[in-house]
Image (cartoon, one colour):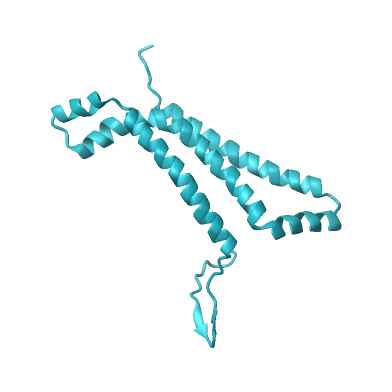
Amino acid sequence: MGMPLEFDSPVLKGFNFKGGMVIRPEFLGMLFGLSIYTAAFISETVRSGIISVSKGQREASQALGLKSSFVMRLIIIPQALRVIIPPLTSQYLNLTKNSSLGIAIGYADLVHGFGGISLNQTGRAIEIMLIVMLTYLSISLTISLFMNIYNKSVQFKGNA
């Protein structure tokens, strides 16, 4: 039933390494750039969500004798999630869009080769690009769907 999953470690043979995995510099640049860029926005979103919970909530829970770890886990975070989830959804969708842009720029040879080969071989470059666009659309809609479901689960359910 297919090939087994194997991990290949690089081994020094002569003056070069054999085996292992090759990571292209373009991929590393895109990975580090998107990670740092998105982490900054997400950390600011989480920080602002935690700060949005009123100071009285923390003081009241400490007055009841709760430890600070319990205060954060049981009082602050559940209330902050209601503020954090909507902009966090936007950041996840932004990450998806930025990664597609990074691939188009960092791997221009792949994108042009993809379009050029499909145009020369089949003459249907538009259909193939449409498939790629629909793939990104389905990824974005899936992220949005799951985040909206999660957002509904953490919303305040009033007395009405």
